[in-house]
Image (cartoon, rainbow, N blue to C red; front, top):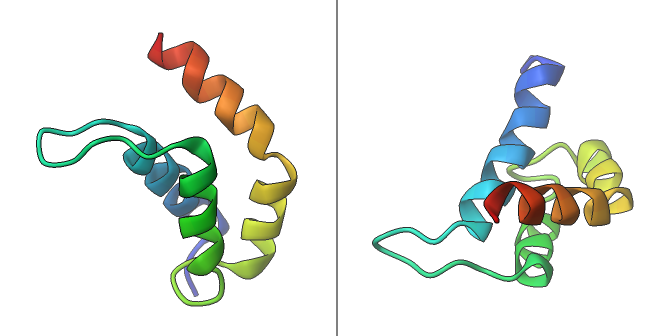
Length: 69
């Protein structure tokens, strides 16, 4: 019963958190972030949305890198 918009944001938020350096952790690479999200498909994330995310992962990578620089 979780709204579609919230399920989409969950994946986007985790991707950003994984890629971003924090005072308590270093950033993960794009590839490692994708592996983590893929491993949580079906438990933490909607598997259909993870598939869409994976299909468009290079766009997410490029957006993150453009915004971060």
